[in-house]
Amino acid sequence: MEMDVTEPLKLDEGRQEGEVTRLEYRETPYRYTDVYIREKTTQLELKYGCPTSGSVNGKLMKLLAKFQKVAAGMKIDPEKVLVGKEVVFMTQNEETKDGTFIRVVDNSVKPKTEVKEEQV
Image (cartoon, rainbow, N blue to C red):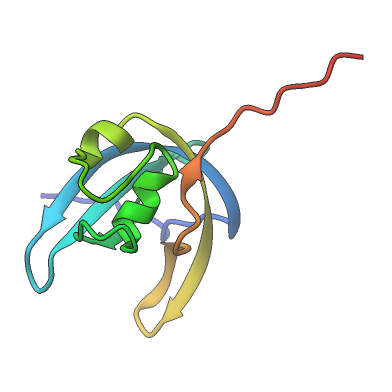
């Protein structure tokens, strides 16, 4: 099989727009919910990981609370809340010994809100 060799994926650091495309759940080594976001301009799909916890103080519930009310005792389906939603988020480039990787900044994902122009 032949493969094309390409340059590493690049995205400028800072504010981005995108859409949540899917969620995946992992059990090892820890219970995690991976939120996949397709960046609007480049169509890159980035992963934002949250520990899978129902605690209102947990990273996943704090994310969901940006999209709808979240309170102890409620039942909530993260996929119904997030998938298909337009979002804004921040990215930063992380340098490692293996190269430079695009990371979604913790707690930066939130719903995209339309700015209404004031009529003069």
